Length: 226
Ligand SMILES: Nc1ncnc2c1ncn2[C@@H]1O[C@H](COP(=O)(O)OP(=O)(O)OP(=O)(O)O)[C@@H](O)[C@H]1O
Ligand SMILES: [Mg+2]
Image 1: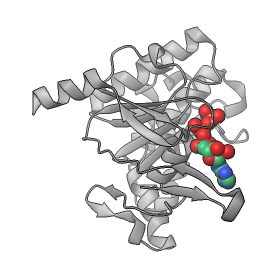
Image 2: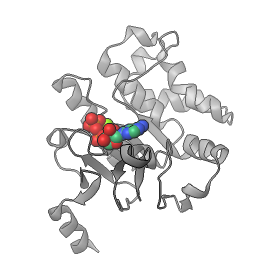
Image 3: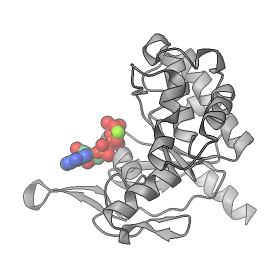
């Protein structure tokens, strides 16, 4: 897959022949220096932007051929997002925030039960009726993770989810995401500038000047396992 921003002399070749696959239930870290292309890659996988060339398969669907409407509904049903800032709506309660992506889907009666269950999972059951601007940064990020999970997405994409947190709170969020991989078999793709924060993870891809490299030891393990 390639992504080129702009045209002519000012064009930026942000992703160069990037190719990889991820299995259900894996936690994949994307690391690399500032400007290397990490967010660009996440935006491609998250269908927030289209690659200039190449294909992206999600759950067996070739997404680059979908039209904008199809992409929106695919994104809402199959993907969850967590960003550096929780971006909760401050006038709503924590619970209402978690339910927002579900409303777009208009499917269900079980939404509130599911949201409460998720809030228990992320340790926010006591805060669920608090206004979103009355909770701490770490709690807000836990709420954002619950919001990212509410539609049972195939993949949760997280761009620097701990980037705005102190190291102790960041550690709690990291452990929460890792426990969700174990407990729910949730697939995560996480951009981070601090892979050591994550300890042992399934896979690490390093982006260097738009190219993707998978760590040798990890690749070795994968070969050995197959
Ligand atoms: N919308 C855009 N238009 C033009 N160029 C862009 C755009 N978004 C990103 N770029 C360029 O593409 C390259 C990769 O940017 P990207 O945001 O993916 O980097 P990053 O690895 O996420 O960096 P950071 O760690 O600072 O967040 C950079 O050279 C950047 O300037
Ligand atoms: Mg970025």
